[in-house]
Length: 206
Image 1: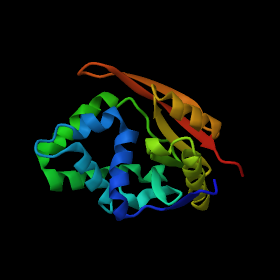
Image 2: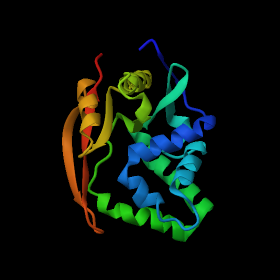
Image 3: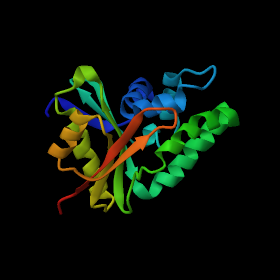
Image 4: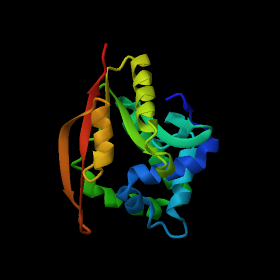
């Protein structure tokens, strides 16, 4: 852990932010941002990270540096903020890309309506990713520990996250760090294919 330095995210971390969002969102990134005419998905992700508001903003981020290299990113916030952050993101996307593009982004998400992201009084880890070349150095665990410290400072006693059904390595990491699966959702997408996730929660020690 001595080689890991964790600091607040900055707009200048946009390249790391965009790639981390792509990695953490997985197929959802393609569904939402892969069909906007004239705009590449990576560019949209970078813009949302650079913006000061919304759930994907650097404002809610922690960056892990490994031996001086930006290696991982975590975005987290109190669960009570999620509705407002989603509204901020939608407002930005509407202004930036227009109504037709916004509808292209949000309509594919209707299949995910059964997924419960957060519970009351939680600190929600919305996105967590470590660049592949920096895996297996304890960076993910270090970011989780830092987020849990933020939760305590805010007076929150639980952290939560979602992990994709097929992301066994991430699930094992979260279980090792004390997170437990409390609900699993299976989804059949209207365009074909299966998806879903595990909702995991950790009660922070007093």
